[in-house]
Image 1 (tube, rainbow, N blue to C red):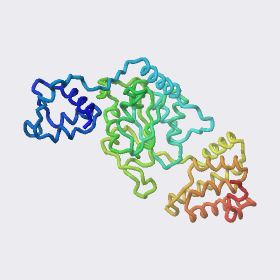
Image 2: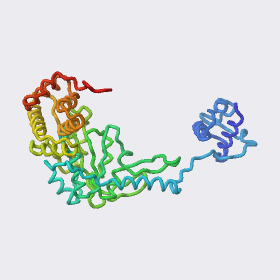
Image 3: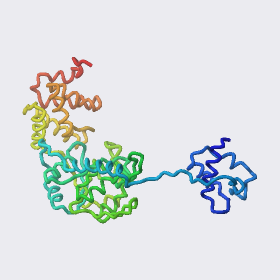
Image 4: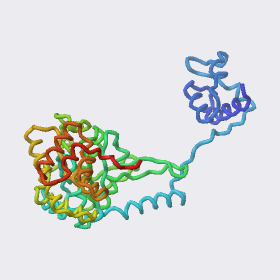
Length: 385
């Protein structure tokens, strides 16, 4: 047995002695961990020291041992280094709270009504559901950009918990400091809190119950009470209405608690844009990408509209979203090849669905001289890897 380990442990125990020289087994083990010494088998297995069940009398062992408190970790949250690091992070976050305007965005759907809600600056939680890629989150961000409203977007997952939302302790330069979460930051600044993909969350979202009522929030980790500033509100986006996905399209969508859902004032079902609006969006994306082709834009939106109607009738299991059309536009800008752009961007679907989509495009655009290539051409042909 190492004498250094022995003396270190005994000195730490003596510093904790209340005058009886008697210690519980758990207190000895706790002190051993604090002291950083090896497990004290030599002490715990010594029957001569037993003073009862789980008790040890160390009076005689303390003779000649000087009481030196075991080293402790001291956390100083007021040191200049901690303050500087924390303030630097807050500055970066604050500079990016107002979303950047997207010149290609075209308002549609719930845009006007939601703009009225956010412009009023009242607390009015809104739940927006809709199929993937139809611009739900983009709409919220662009309204905030238009109104010059600060917005904080939080992407929700099954792992999202109270520390991620409200805040928790983190290590900075060897010191434990409290990091404020996006929810409290939004409350203090009167910002719009966007809970993106909220139906991917778990019951840990219940920590937002009081916040969703627009009331003051007591932060039990700091003792601070936060009163929402004027303008603070919450907008949640999701592919479902929080009831899960019966058709299996969104397998990670969770069943959200009824009490949580009940705190949203209204629920909105966001549809895909009309063909007229979607063509404007596609042409705007083409303009930004430098590949404007109005005929191609017309054929793309007609193609996607037919696919969606077929999907709604239950004849197919997949659809082409507005986001997927943007992917096709960008691929067209890169390769300057409509065939390759459509083929590459439909490769994510299973073979039968992909071929059905390609065949349908050939019917929508029968003048396309390369139509046969949509079926026969390998999209990677001629590409050097």
